[in-house]
Length: 108
Image (tube, rainbow, N blue to C red; front, side, top):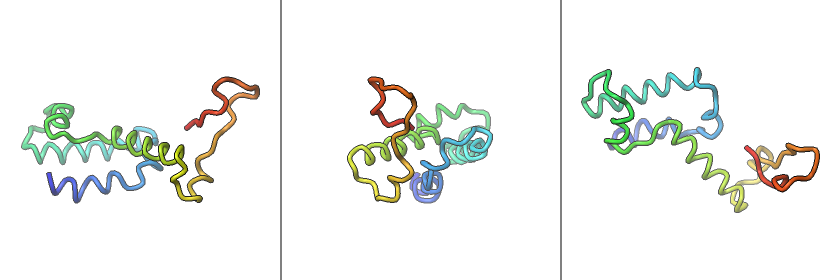
């Protein structure tokens, strides 16, 4: 597990906020590689359920890593803890042309 957290997970997390929302056909190879690695770590068969392995090893899936990192980014944005450069990429966009109750909310 130490090898997974030191050699594999950092590569999955690096820049995940930028590329994590891509279409599944682009991310699928990473998911398959992560599943194979976890099967090897847990000495599971190639057709064992990946969900059970993730639960057994208490490891987050690629989608869960993406959601957590995105939540951390949005928290930093809402508390003004982001570097000024990031503020140019995250901004409130106008979804409606008229004023609504939700018009001041930040949308991803």
